[in-house]
Length: 310
Image (tube, rainbow, N blue to C red; front, side, top):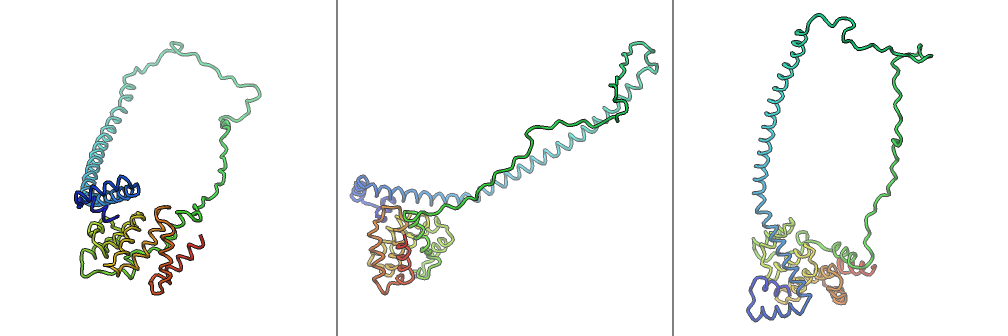
């Protein structure tokens, strides 16, 4: 259903085909989920392209903001320096005032017994005459200031993947998956510079650029690379459908064996119930029964052994 979804989103369907597709869409909840997933993927890739275009503009804005901050700090430094100089000169003039007032006071002080406060004699408790003076005062002890020892904490252990279930199957699929940039069987169809650029972008994990360079409706290697982009974006069920359609395409039988293997891995990684287990078992047994299958010895046998342990 991936080609039909793409034609529907690109408005490439006839009126009759579009009406039939919308009828199927209203009756099939799985098809609606696939359409929503495809629309979300396209939105994410467009958002990545827009972010790259605005990166230079953001850098220019950041440099302007930095220049404004530097100018503000320079102005603040000048203002602070001028205020410091003014304050120091003001302190010097204030220090001269007490001296002037002291010189203006009359030399003759008040006469004895006139407007003088009474002198109080200090009384010393008996028995403390010979004690040393100016003893340091004893500081009161504060209650509850003793440091509290921290309780030892047990180290956290990494969560384990439960045996069986979605997480374990996904872990098995990822452990056996190899990207086309590292895989020897990824072949180029002629001197297609655009397709080579798409493969380079995929190997550098620039999935938005890779998707923009290839024609996803074109069968063969573009469809093969499109399935890997879906797998890298964790859209495993759509990747399974893409690889399965390529494996069943008799006009491109050179991709059959590669597409079968990656369809099997994408089906294992898909959410439970999306791909029946009988379909995956049948595909695995088909590889094992074919003595000339390139994935039989090193891949399929190991995968069956890992699945049997679960």
